Image (cartoon, rainbow, N blue to C red; front, side, top):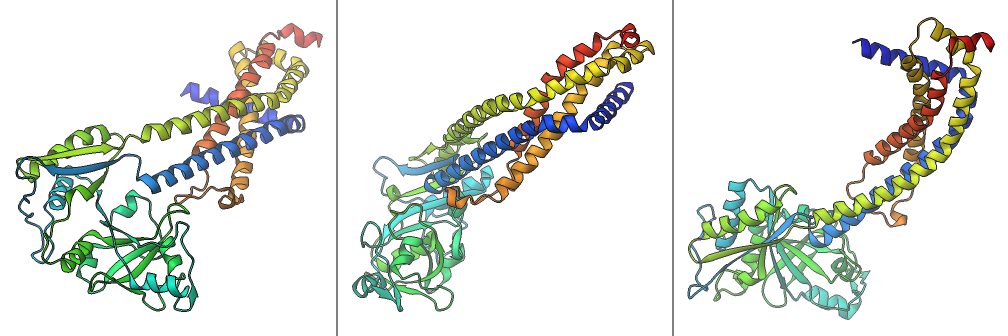
Length: 440
């Protein structure tokens, strides 16, 4: 308790002295405030750039710790299908591998996983738009790679979380889409251009397959991952399985296992363990003769490494700039100590210890630079808040109010530089003797 009282007393004394010398202190700290503001702004922009790059990478390749899991059966029974899971609906297309993965996810408490199957479809509306140059009176835009049939990506609803997909219009796919007469689909911006960007909420857009009687209703639009992405149509995995089954009733209902993979998003601390456990658990549920494989999930370390390197370089440069700005405060502190010789000598004569005098003078510099750091961070927050980030190429889904790390770094460096600058005048104050107060 006594130590806390001494610390609080030193802080109050330091703040009082800063107020007495406020004119000199303010002038000397202008450079520190500017340096901290510049450094915090650059660190914040660096954090936002890295986060934007990370989100773009996750939109292309999935979350950093996403495993790509597949299952196959070897030997003479490779074409056989295991029994369907107990929880499958009688009217649903059998999907034993998906049912087994659902069982594994439930046992291992995996919240986000999704099946992915790629296919293609020919649509009458796309062909008509290509011929007429319009759709419902809206001019169409030819894709960057030319006209082609849309790619169908059958996925589970959790796919949007794994790949950071956020609908621009409407909604994302749902499990209940399998029960709809018109199969709900979500199209990307490239396919929306092929349809003249016609509104999807005013009048339903129904697409007709040229290869079968299947019909699709557009319920959402998502952005394209790249300017050169072809037209893509997303459908719920179970709904697309029903479309395939109705289009080819004589074929096996089970899709080609080589074209289907399962994406499993796990935490960074469990990725190595999950890479071993999930395939074995999947093969165990499927039965004898089955093998599971898992790959990926190793990008998290690379993302953290790039962020750490950028932050280190910025902090070193910023620390040098803040130190140069704090030299003015050092000069003011030394001059102030020389002017306070009588005061310090009297305090020593009245029993003040050398440690108390040292700590009091030392804390004056620390308190001043801490306040300068607070002002610098406040300026940085205002600058980042009003910067046109999207025009700078920084596009974020999870945009923070201000990167907390940048604020903490600015305050830590400014306070640390203040501590360094406070050591010299503090030692000078300790050397003052009571007799000096009489001679002064």
